[in-house]
Amino acid sequence: MKILLKGNNLASWMIALALQQYKQLKVTVTGKPEQPCYPAVVSALPLFKTVIAQCSIDQNVFFNFMQPRPLLALQLASIEEHFPKWCAFSNYGAPLGPVKFHEIFSKLHLNNNNIGSYSDFSLAIQLAKQGKFSPPVDDINSPFSTFDVGYIFDTAQLLLFCQKQCRQVACSPSVQYENDFDLIIDSAAINNNNEKVQGLTWQELTKPNNSDKFSKQIKQVEDGIYTSIFSNNGVKNCQLIYHSVEANSTSSMLIKYAKNAIKTSVIELQKLQSETQKSGAQTKVVEVPQDWRHPCSILSPLDFICAFISGLLKYFPSDNKHSSLLYRHYSQISDSLLDFESLVKDLLLNNDDNPLLKHYLATSSIPERELSWIHPDWYIGALLEFNKTPKMETPLARQAPMARCITLHQQVKMVFQRILTNLSL
Image 1 (cartoon, rainbow, N blue to C red):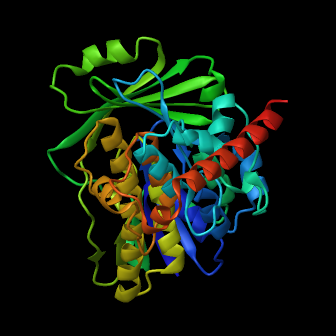
Image 2 (tube, helix red, strand yellow):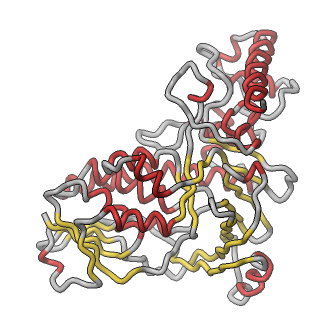
Image 3 (spheres, rainbow, N blue to C red):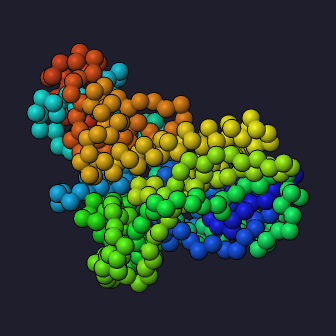
């Protein structure tokens, strides 16, 4: 089977990496190398390593080549806050039988008990605050099984890895006859829409503090949402996505936000709409949804590319049925990703009109999706860190006497203090 990947970009080469494990496929990447539409350093959610495994890539080979920086938590700061809130890819607290730790914490908070911050009960956040990294372990008896790890990648290095691994993949600036291919996967198309997303990206030479080493910073600033992450070589990679911007204000923003920059570029991407499948008379065409080009604060291009690849490997588009299943699989994952992005932004902007926030305040739970890459504890961790407490106790928490809740809270607190003391030795 002959496959043409249109678009000489990160998405096409990651798709080629996924397909090169199948010897019966002849894959060609076509197009001139695209100017990168993403920051030089990007983050990836923990499920990235699962997709790498699905691509039959030896994880030791991959991580030895890439040398990524582990990502344990997000630092979230609004204009009003002097100290960041935290959100981690982790469970919080400890198992307490049928009642969940966040239900006990919410009950105590509703009754005005002095219980500290919810982030005090995430081992991943405490490690990030101390600038320490201990890899998670697959042992339910260990506290180091309570969190997962995202990654911070150099995107040029990732593109180079994909190209080096794809030894059997042909690359050509153009092809003469597209109908010679059985399947075209197009990641080059960009929607034509007058509305645009605008912003800046830049790099600064700076030395991270301990809490910057294994976290990603997202701040609400006067002009928009500001994101910064550190690479392994001591460079701070920054991005600002505007709330709104006048045509002539870009240069003043460059001066304001990038005065210490060693490299600066302006983001001006089309605002995206949902993609629809296209079919040719002889050659089947599948378009890669353009979410990966959309500048995000919490997410990155890698998260959306991996969502597409996971669907591609599960539902290879050999016919219309499998194509629709591929798009359905992708949309379920991408919707969960965008829900998380939207919730965290609304928490920063103090917008209480978010549907997930409303549901949580009314029910003490997060609605379950058929397929999601965001664990409910990640949502709840962000909500409770911003003091968004449900209006009523859950039935299980209601049955637990207040004295029992205080005792359970203190026991979990003592366990965390003991673990953190050992880490500090």
